[in-house]
Length: 140
Image: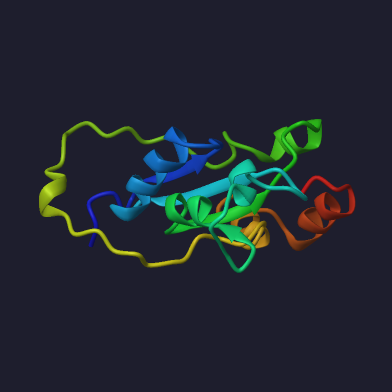
């Protein structure tokens, strides 16, 4: 069991500090859901070279162990889907000794929108009909 396994993190960050921070949380067991813009995703997906299978090495290096969804937060409908529907935010109250916690890569960085339906259904409790409606409207 990892020290942060009961923590859910919604990652709305992009570029350097945010993705790196949420990657460290994911390495320690937190469930991290990376939210990206439909169509293009995180800007860093195309930063390179080097590339591996059309993804930049930079993007791959800071987004491991995360679930990935696409969500258009510029649309009103997209903002309705975003937290606080994800539930209560938990805060860490005590420090951990990170040097005694082994890091591991449990999952490769997500493909653009790879977990959208899974996250909307399991974490936000949306029905297949609601998800299909968002897809039809171009929100996810």
